[in-house]
Length: 342
Image 1 (cartoon, one colour):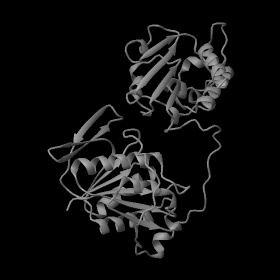
Image 2: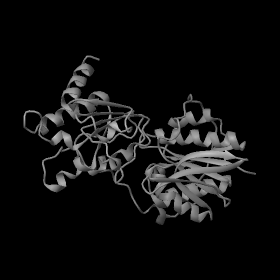
Image 3: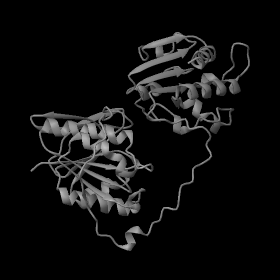
Image 4: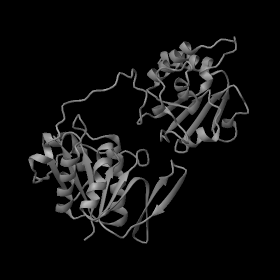
């Protein structure tokens, strides 16, 4: 009998991430369109805050709980997932493409003699057969494919499905206890050390992506550079809108080339052909010319707007829904004042 197993793990706060709930939507879509039962497997220290899963009406829920499953560790995660999969014997396995699952699921696929496709961006059913879509070569080409070998594991990329909305409900579950040895637990999590990187500017779940280009660091109309003023305006905007920060290749390369740069802009913020391809609902580009290598990173953003003094820049060539021909310094300063009144 064909079955779908949806895998989830709790976060540090024992809750489920947005990506996990987006992936649950994908699993429910598969279950409904293929007309096969949905089962759930949850891994974590405590599942009390995962009750929203019950409103997805799975046929059964299996859990593996304990302090040793609170944090990511390959040996214990692989054992836990393998235990759930052998109990369920699923045809399809759907999981969020979190760093924790992305690390361990390829190995689990090998243990189960199955197949895996990572960062799936779309699902479709044709003649009762499942097809998936995923991107390759830094999102410059995509493929639609299917497989016959099972179990078929799929990890779902963020931003492609709506977040599952449901009410918290009490549910019954079967708690499994994997057989383990001390050698599997010999890696100990002592704690976390984060680099002192200042303000958190990368926010994958933010509705708005604000992208800064090299124009912020150039000489302005009075002939002077105003990088300190630029940093103040950008950070104020990010704080007031809770937006995520992106940068063009030219602006993130400035510090490595010995030029004065925005201190909070790193290569992790880079958007474009050689950077990230984010999936925010809206995007606002400022002081970027909108050439193809940069604009290619915007392909999954639904609404695109840009601010640039050049009316003939790349954004004006059909790459932006709206182009404001204006001084970004003046525009963002005015917007920040308006936002201060709210």
